[in-house]
Length: 203
Image 1 (tube, rainbow, N blue to C red):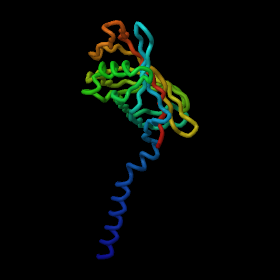
Image 2: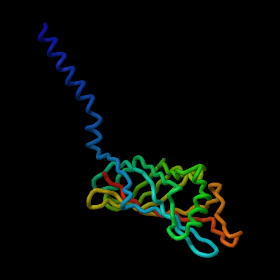
Image 3: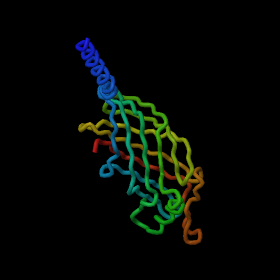
Image 4: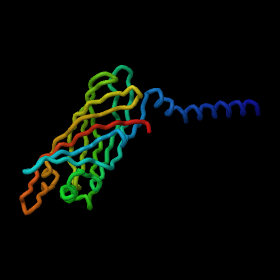
């Protein structure tokens, strides 16, 4: 009777261990992995216009990730993605006045985070080169809008992923007044273009 009970407990223990580790085995088989956006090989810029010169500001500080499920020979399934850019750290590198005007327009002191969170995605292509249409919530200057951003995706030879694309928006849609200076002598345009060249890796 004692031996039978020990054998039963041993079988029960093995079954519980198998059940406990089953989810991680399934994830490994599915090829799901989370990659971080590499700041050393990623560029995010905002291009704008004015009645004097065109201008560009660059995101100097940001963080983000993408969770994907790799499919052999096909475009990966993009499960989750998030990007946060620090508005206070954006810089054009040419004019401190323009940098200050842009940060003030973005209400960076009150709303330092420019944030995009993925809510839906469509992919088309093969495993190494594919097109992506992302849907998500963009929060800018404290105002959130749902947008669609088309991207081109590439699986690099080292297993990392690169995403490139651009998105046009009007600042007034986010209750942002286009910056002006010199008593109205300098006036910026309402539309800006956000450009992405993002590399996601395991580092």
